[in-house]
Image 1 (cartoon, rainbow, N blue to C red):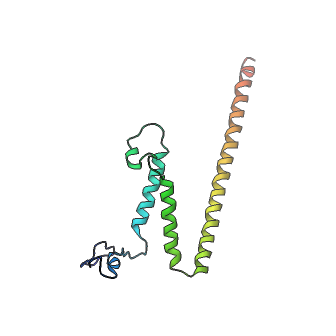
Image 2: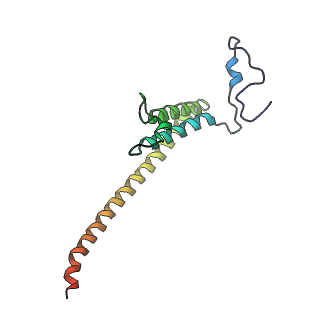
Image 3: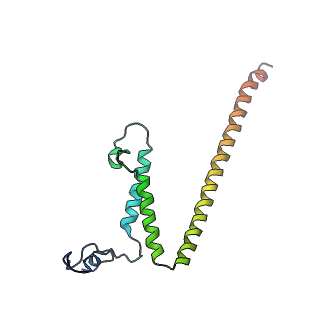
Length: 144
């Protein structure tokens, strides 16, 4: 039984034998461990659900912040684990270079998002002021 993603070995050695854990490896053709991607995705969904207001049946899926740790903690922990796994496949200098490059990318995106929301806030205030001015002036202009 050979597949691209195998969870169960054909012949499972006993846990007492040396190297038994190697037979349970997750082998994927692309090199990604989809189990970790699934857990990170679940943590993101749980964070989204926990930000809902009011009572929701979706709280059954997320636990609604009833645990000692939150979904955000799980997301960061799993992301750090994935980062360590990826970095272990490379030399130290290459790993640091890739992490720093990704850090700069994420920082720039965060800055752009922040500036975008700031611009939207300023634009909203200007529109509200223009609407208030129009509402104050329109009765004066319509009487003539």
